[in-house]
Image (cartoon, rainbow, N blue to C red; front, side):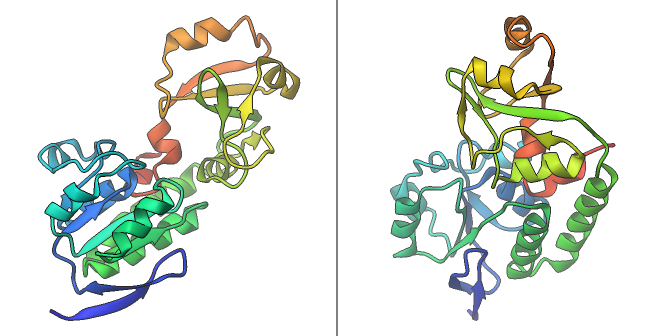
Length: 249
């Protein structure tokens, strides 16, 4: 089989069988994209839940941050797909000793389009990738500056944790037209008092990774009476693959 060398989004050179025939994906949004273009995915994490019908019969190799290398080894992959933020470095370094590992590094919509173009090319599924990327681009352009106001995007409870700077979520909030009031990097912890001090017009409660529900909104309305509390689909805001097609203005 012919092999080709590619540069991934972390600037690493990766030599891959062309095209790969057995892919293990360690990232939910990238699993969904790979299956959507018809790539030969043979293993996934327990968080890779879309597309539902196609993933239900795929072997599970653990989580994104605690995958089991022995289970991956049994699947004999000729390519593993990971992500700098979602996977842990030590595990990736162990996998690299035995398998080609292509890593994404995504902070913006352009990064996500670049990832999809690259993986579609590696899999020699160029027509399929073009269709999906164009649909994602069209959907996300329609929502540009469609919102307004100062927001906090919460991802966790006890302690409160929010999406801050240098994250894909922050980029998407800005793309939508929101002003993210959390200026710290990554995912800082916030107190009740800090959230009050920031005086957001709206507090967005993500459906993942913490499964916020309506009951949680009812619990906090008295804490922050001047802010509108709203549940949002965490997959839409944080999955940077073909799910971007599902945005509607």
